[in-house]
Image (cartoon, rainbow, N blue to C red):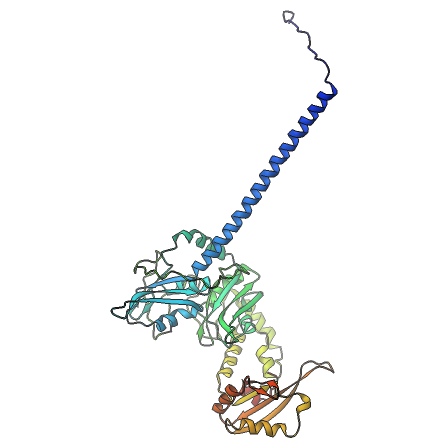
Length: 452
């Protein structure tokens, strides 16, 4: 250690005030640049994340449009478009159906393109119609081959749909409403929302809708048990919802009519055949993997996973008094077997021919006098013999000053007279009022239930 040479410490002159200020400025600049760099990096990442989210949203939108389209091949050349339409319409309403025809023979080329309003309808038809016998041939059903670039996004949407608590229900009888649907499906679990898509042209629904449960298990049970269930003479088609909540398919989309060869379908199509007894009645060759082993008759289908729950509900309902009026009986909240029985009875009553017409917005309370009944009888007598006229004043609420609506019931001797009068009088103007004339349930009228 003694051999080491110790060098003297070199101490420079102290920094001048100007030098110290320059050094402080340099430090501040370095900090500012560092912060700028971090902020710029964060902004770039955020912008990139937004762009990726927007791109994914657009890709999903495009994929949902493409998922509405299916290709149907190996169609017997003598089959008409109506038969194809009847076979595939239970899954949901169409936007378009296109069958290419040979100009020389005048017959179609053996394939068709169908675009549904919803991707759920197309997916169900893909699952259930491949391999079905139509006109003696086993048809092929797949996605059009001109959209391979969308398959990854489509696969992603299908994978996400497995975790959906919403289900899609189609082939719903037009006389059923959301309450009827809820009364049947509530047996599987608590329902958060239930909606049927309205048809602005008819004023009814389009035959399909969506139900959202509070648990994934309830949604899975509903799909498993209710797919192909006969409700009101129509087999329900039930599957998982694919479209996210609040997302609508862009209107006016249409697919290319470029002819594809018979083998231009997605791979792994089923080849098994199943007979179709008559046009428009489709019997899938095998039930989908989520369906039950057999289709129970209406009113006795009890899903095994919820049998104990239905037993408890039945015991509780046996002690419950039903309301007196038929309208209240129709709207009573029931689940499971009893609900299905009641819905079937409701549909049967609606399908009966009625001889009763109800006129609304024809008169106010102050217009009622001794001559009103005879005037209505005389006017309606132009359409056929009238049995009786009932003028009913319906109070809207229990409050003393609640408004009163006047409804005039006209019973004809024949249902044909009632139908003719309804068609002519509905929308007609009388004394500055636009009359609403509609048919009324014969069953309710005979039971003196005029509150419907």
